Length: 373
Image (cartoon, rainbow, N blue to C red; front, top):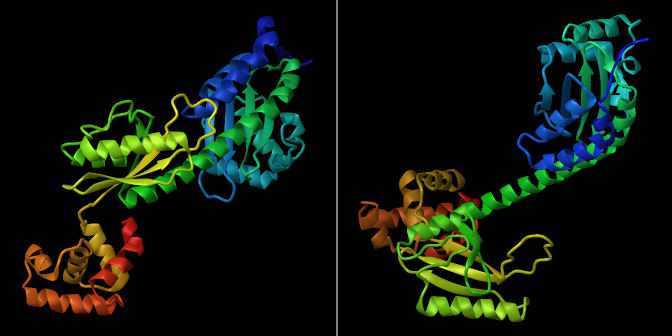
């Protein structure tokens, strides 16, 4: 009879509760589940534990999280070996622990080659659990030992643990999808040169994003910090903000209000009420101010105008100046052009952009993807 690794008595009773806490907290770790894998290895007596996960419909490499030491793996050779052996890992029932003999048939020559590969890396005893998540991702949890088999009650322990692992993987997948969506939305807003700042009833700043902080830094007379004040916001702007916050407290259906913050550089803010059903967020804001500043045109934006409308370099520079509200004469001085040349360029710009004048040009450019540059 094959020797097995005994599990300490105190772990038999507290193991599942102890490991579940680290499993569900592990979605917030980086890399995920580091503490969970260490704890699982300790409880089960495994030499090596790994959680391998692959996203659906992607060519990105597998994410491998592990605890303990194993021999060096050659990924390309291992993948070719598993393909050649036609091992049924993808057909295993989800959330069920399989011992190595249930997966690999030593009488099959290609399977025997795979076993020899594992033995060469000190993997003689193993449990594998197939993990899936509703978004199509899939992976496996593997526990291995080199000198003796796992204790008999480890299979039962893993059977109880496996559905919780799938739930934790689903939680992480959902968080990652939401983070990606938030990152994409935030990048679009940033490219429009909009930032946000949230306020409590007294006008204190609850939170703000990096773009808003940058815009406030550009205004020497203005500043903001979380849990501080938007300062020195005085006079009409301060009264407008406080009156707006008071109105939002009375009714969350109040209409958004615009507040002008600075002339040089130009900075304004649209204040909108917050309607939140958050349960455990601590201090909740009453309103969010979407802050917008006028940003100088960049060389990158000039290049993109050239690409989008087939403008020359000077035409693109002039187009940007015109969208900033400058007259042709003012733009000519700024760009070191004669006024006559600037007028010739402007006619070419209107022709290439199919616009009928400066106002129409502003509309077309600001409505194009250039606004996101």
